[in-house]
Length: 257
Image 1 (cartoon, rainbow, N blue to C red):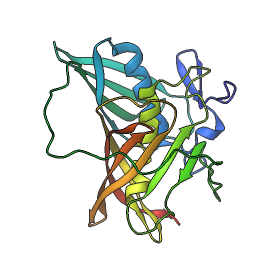
Image 2: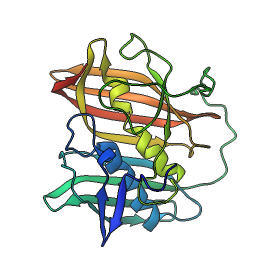
Image 3: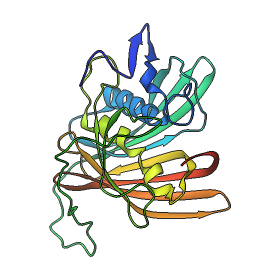
Image 4: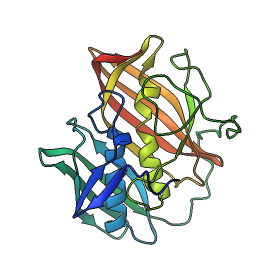
């Protein structure tokens, strides 16, 4: 990672975006995945505790934001013996642009029972070549496509972050996964003619945090009607499945072909 190329620089309580923090929909719009990453970073910094595991993160992306400095505020909603709930609000000087809610659960001994259904590990090895090259908007992260874009059937990719999120801070496993989870929308909502939806939110659920920098994403469901869609993916690391991500999305005229 290059510490001089972080997506945001912290200045006087604000997070100032770098040029590569833009998204694919417009050159002057912040990428929504970074807002989820910022929410995860703030909640983890202020509300993480040994023995508590980040089991869920829901990110609501209800307003597009231009490339403006952002602030993130968190609040503790519930602090019980086995559960902690914390929220985050992300704002610019134009108002609130996103919010998030995290659930932390107390870890304990795993029940010694045979499950009736288990998500299998990938039959895909980690990438051993360079990431793919793309035309147009170039993702500011490493991307390996295991299936062709828009091909029928489940889409699969490996992702790896290449820039810090804020200044020279190392990415935690939780923040790394929150950034990757936003890819659930293009992967589960892709069509043979391109991407015709933009997501309004995503909900990440984790049985465990990832090991290492690589995160695999596999689309496992899509349903749509009346210009509204929902999609789901399974998340993996090189050791096996780690959780799931569910998105809701709305039809978008500015489709990516």
